[in-house]
Every structure is written in structure tokens, then in C-alpha cells.
Image 1: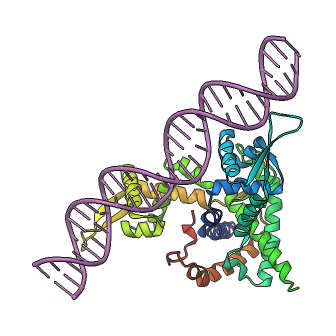
Image 2 (image 1 turned 90 degrees about the horizontal axis):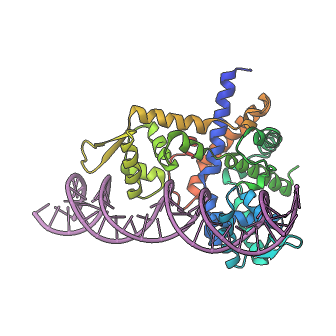
Length: 164
Length: 164
DNA sequence: TGGAACGATTATATTGCCATAACTAACTTT
DNA sequence: AAAGTTAGTTATGGCAATATAATCGTTCCA
């Protein structure tokens, strides 16, 4: 029952299968095509769905450097998807806000990314319930451990929606 | 019990969590750093683990165009990781074979990619067994359906190890 | 046997992603 | 108020990934 080799084999099997499922159909290309923009722009757009952010905040969330964020936001602003406004109370900061069109585009990206693959959708109710249960366990384990254990990773809330 | 909204919500939840788990820690960079080569080279190298391939076959597996494969294999050959030989019986074709060093590098990449994330490794035996069971169900569903249903995707054997 | 098809390569170009350096404007701290 | 810090931008550049076009030798087929 508690054979460590069997456990390790099961882990590898499961992990390989998960990776295959997620990586096999690359939604990124689909999102980029659907929105007519490169994926990094869509990623930024999606980050703004939960509310306006300053450039600095957006930079931190994207995990890149400030000048790159300027490039990305310039592009999005040019498309009419975001607006930059001055932060009241700190005129250095710019607040980036989605426009209506930007929100629509971000939601479109969301829908594409959220669409589960057929193999997942084909699961029996029982299997899905079991999977749901296990993934919840994984989430709580991850929230407690994973980020802290990665030295160079910026500490940030674990947000399943962040994966792109 | 069979509430379609609840099912759909569970599907989204599970899928988002899976994507987060797979995409959050990007092993690609780690592989690239460990092998001292760009990730696309490692990808090709890994493809050769299961045996020699012609340039055409490798091209199809990688899903890119022929000239790119030439570039990649040139690089790998320059590092002493692969050898090109002429196909006996068709002198147009080149057979690409891993060298010993190439195999070692590919296996190193494999080990990095196969290492399950902490949150997964922390699963209880019961949860892991349940997950293993469900992922097996997903694999059989995927093998029957998924590839055939994607129009522009080249038909190719589903290989969980292929995901990179 | 001559042309079509195929395998591979060379040459060239594009796009995406992202960094560093240097700068300006605004705020904070002493 | 001078010095330091922070937010953002401009300018520049690099590498990775990958495509297209043209070419060459080889093989297949009518």
C-alpha cells in the first residue's frame, strides 16, 4: 500500500498527464488570434479585469520590468483598451483602467482560457467530483508552501486565474 | 446532484487550477539554464530520446517548418549532442541520432520536467490514488477524441511525455 | 527519360518578449 | 531645502522562435 516506488511512479504519471493536458492545446495562440494582439498584451489585459492598477502594480503582477509594462500599456492604450489617468494624491503614478472595449476583449480571452478541454469535459460526474476535491487539496497545499519555497519568486497571492 | 451549472462550475474550477499548477512554475527556463541551451533545442533533443528520426519526422513532431529544424539540429550537432547520417536506401534523408552526451542531456531535461511540484507531491495517498485514477480516465478520453476533433492539428500519437 | 515530387539546406526577415541604461518628475526624509 | 527614493518613460538592443523563398540533389513515376 505505502510503497514509495509506487507512489513516485503515480506522481510522475499524474504530473506528465497534467502537463500534457494543459500544454497540448496551446490556448495562447488562440487568444492572440482572437484578440488580434500578442499574448503578452492579453495577459496584461486580463490582469486588469479585477480592477485598475498602477503601472508598478501591473509590472509586479506580470513579473517583468517597468519599461516593458510601458510598452505593453502603450499598445493597449493605442487600441483603446485601457486608459491611463493620474493617481490622485500621487502625481507620479498612473492608474491603468480597462475601457469597455478592453473589458470585452479581456473577457473574451477569459472565456477561451477557461474552456476546459474535451477530455476533461467528458469526465463522469463521479470522476469530476473526485478531481474537484483533489484539486482543492492541491490549492491549499500550494498556498501554504509553494511560493515561500521558491527563493527568487516574488511573493504574491496565489490566484488560479493568473495562469496564462 | 446532476445540476449542470454546478458541473460547469466544477469544470472551470478544476481546469483553472490545473492550468495554474502547470503554468505557474515554468520549468522551461530551468531546463534551458541547466542544459545551457534555448528551450527549443531541449525540446528537439527530448524528442529524439525514443529513437532516431529523420529531419522530416522531427519537423512534424515539433510542429514547425523544415528550415527551423535544420537550424536546431545544426546547433545540437555543434554541441556534440546529435549526429546526422545518411538514410540507407534514400540518400535525400538524414537520420538524426542522439550521441551519448545528447542522451544524457535529454534525460536531464526529462528529470527536470518530470519532477512534480510540491503541492502535488504533498498529496495524501488517498488523494493521489484518486487523482491517478481520474487522470487515467482523462487520458483514455483524450486518446479517443481530442486530436481528431482539432482540425488543423497534425494527427499524432498522444504522448504525455511530449508536452513541453 | 524527363518532369514532378520530396528531403534538406541556405539565406533572409519578422515578430515577440524582455532587459539595461539613462532620464524626468514627483514625493519623502532628514 | 538638499539628498535620496519612487514612478514612469524613452531609447536602445538582444536573443529566441519561426516563417518564407530559393536552391540543390535525389527519387519516383508516367
